[in-house]
Length: 246
Ligand SMILES: C[S@@+](CC[C@H](N)C(=O)[O-])C[C@H]1O[C@@H](n2cnc3c(N)ncnc32)[C@H](O)[C@@H]1O
Image 1 (tube, helix red, strand yellow):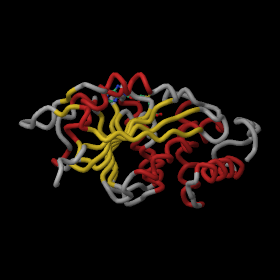
Image 2 (image 1 turned 90 degrees about the vertical axis):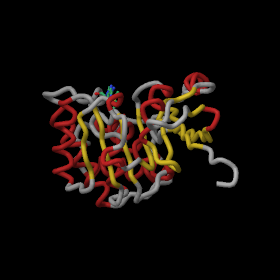
Image 3 (image 1 turned 60 degrees about the vertical axis):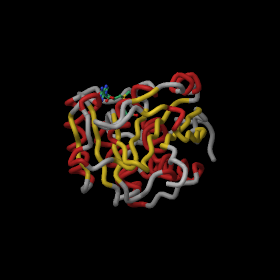
Image 4 (image 1 turned 90 degrees about the horizontal axis):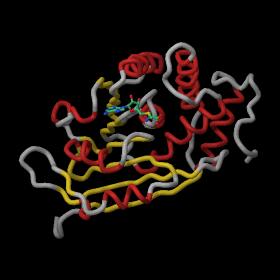
C-alpha cells in the first residue's frame, strides 16, 4: 500500500480513475470487496458533495483524498457486522455517512437516514435520486423526536458516526431497536471514557416496557485503523443479552 494520505494531486477529483483506485486500494486493505459499480456510486456521491459544499456548508472535509478515506472507506467498515437485507437507521447522517455507502454495498438494505438539518436532508434527497437508491427514506427530524420506529417496524441495526455521546445515542435509539437488533456507534480511538460512562446506566424501553440496564448489553468492540492516515477508529457494537433459555 502506498504511504500516508493525501497525495492525490489536484486532478484526483472524485470523478477521476485515480480517486476510484484510491478507494479500491483502501477497501482491499480493510478486507472489504468493492466493485466498479460501488466505486461509480461513491464517486457520484463524492462529486455531488464537493459541488454542493462550494456554496452550502455540508462537511468540513473538502480534500478529495481525505474524503475517499474518512467518508467512504470509514463508512463501509461496519458492512462486516450488519445483515445485508435488514433494516438500518443512520442517526445524524449528515451528508449520508455511513448510511449511503453501506446501502451502495448492500442494495437490499432497507435504509432510513435521519438528520435535523434541512440543508443536509435536501442534499440527501438529491443523492438518492442521483444514485437511484430504492427502499431508502430520509427523515428531517431530531433523534429525540423518534419515539417509535416509522410504520412500527423496529430497526435491525441503528448506527451513528461522529454524532453524539454514547449514552445519548443509546437512550434515543433503544426504543426503536428490534429485540435481536444491534446498536453501532462509530467512534475515534478515545472511546473508553464514553463506554465507562455508559456502564451502570438504565434506559427506558418502548412505552410500557421496563427500563433496560446497560449491564444487560453484550458489548463488542472492533478497533481498526484507516488505511492511509492510520487514524484510530472503533465500532462499539451493543446487543441486548437474551434471557437464559430464550
Ligand atoms: C458531525 S455531523 C456527522 C455526520 C455524519 N454522520 C458523518 O459521520 O459524516 C452530525 C450530524 O448530526 C446532525 N444532528 C445534530 N443533532 C441532531 C439530533 N438531535 N438529531 C438528529 N440529527 C442531529 C447534524 O445536523 C449533523 O448533520
